[in-house]
Length: 395
Image (cartoon, rainbow, N blue to C red):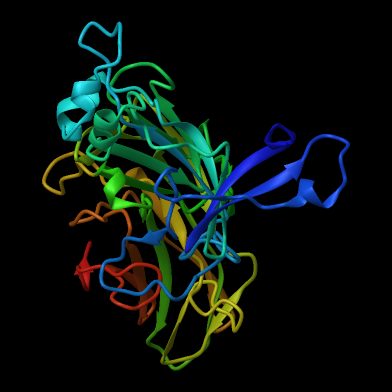
């Protein structure tokens, strides 16, 4: 009867196998949900987030995520590794599967457990098709006992365009992420860029997990940095922000090298792989009353304002020409004060610190007298993710 089912393994305290009938049968026996022993099958716990001190309780807009399941990310994809190949690549090296740490076998591993397996998240239920048993060399008592010491590595991603290399062969896993743009231009007619098309991309990894550890708990981290803007009106009159644009040449592709027990992050050089254009971040004018401040995009439905997600360069250094977010970065603000329409432009600014992934930063636009000044800071609120750098002047 089991041949009449598409098998899907789930975990919610116990492991159950949900079944879908693929034959013409319709009797009640075809709708049973067989229960599988979690000690025999690989299962996943409810995914969590790596936070920098905050609880991730608020979402600033739809592309920022802080949970899995209903109202958040509904699935993730995973690659699983256990038994490496011999150095010549011709056979499985079962001896190296037992009690060998990931850095020692990553170069000889293949995704022999999972290859881009989608795992669906539904509340506390994690499910995937074709339940995968824990690996064992043979059914002998000795091999079964040894299998409890096999070390597994799981690499996962969600909510973005990711590609794993090698996809199925032997070698160090390198996960590539791509922003949803290509090429583009600046100048008098810059390429329009839609910030809402950028997903809040996530990655996770679990190294040297064993069968004795039970279900696999994955902690995801955001790979992009968030930029939002806050207007401070230090005059007694209303300040009407008609539009805010952010343009430049930005990093397009990031890579995550899993040769060791941590992901080595890098980005492709701007000259090799980048995108250019202008983000128009406001859809309607915003009035900032005198002696007050508001986040760009603030509304009662969106109290955290609008956040732009960009790919940061982890090798950035403020003392060199290795830039954090890209080059030719320019902010353009069109505004009205006392009935007079004006434009303020801040061209090709450079940060005096490195904005990190998993952190949201705020550009404070202070209108004093008759001009803006700009101060960047990392958020220290329980919003998306917490930062550590505060009130850092970039002028």
